[in-house]
Length: 263
Image (cartoon, rainbow, N blue to C red; front, top):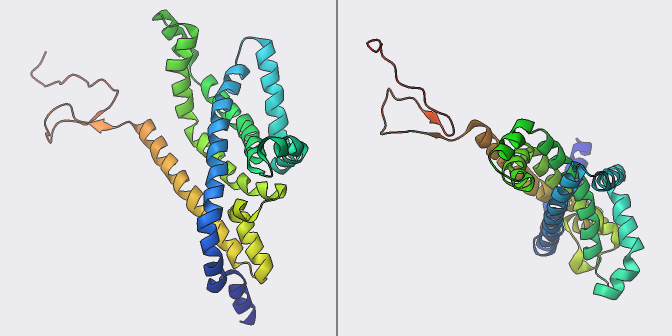
């Protein structure tokens, strides 16, 4: 019983949580969102370009894209962050001063680009080649067919995988603390870690984990809902409500009505 009490006091000390909560809301949460959102936007944009280069018919585009993907997917995230954050720190000091966030965002963006690029590449290549051939037959240029027909279908197919990578990016943002953060630059994990070190209690670190769950779990369920709606289609009626009238799935052609007296 004493062990359970000690375990409870170690992880569920409400006083320690209340002390760390203001810093997490005012400093940690905004900084985590800044790191994650900016890195996600840059990684998604560059990832799409990387995916296009990876499926290019030109070797001088395809091979560098393959090498880039292998390197940044193969390296641990913390190694990439340290290599960029420490290796380019002198340049960073001259450009924006003692702020590790730009280099942290750069490292996270490079990592996200490799993963998201591979996700988009697989989604684009999963589209039936007949879609491209049909678009070209209708008069679309290759670039227009890819932009308007192939890429939207490919992105929709890999939407859950893309969001999973964004969730991983939110969690990887905690590794930026290796670059050294001032009090006002700390993200959720660093605040929880500092509070745990100062009090000898892990409750603040558990609170940081709860914040990460609040950010990631609703995002997971939301994308599952969107993916389900995209796959099932939106059911609509073609006329006034009628008990005998079947529901029509958007995008499908209704079958003609038949009766026993019709020949």
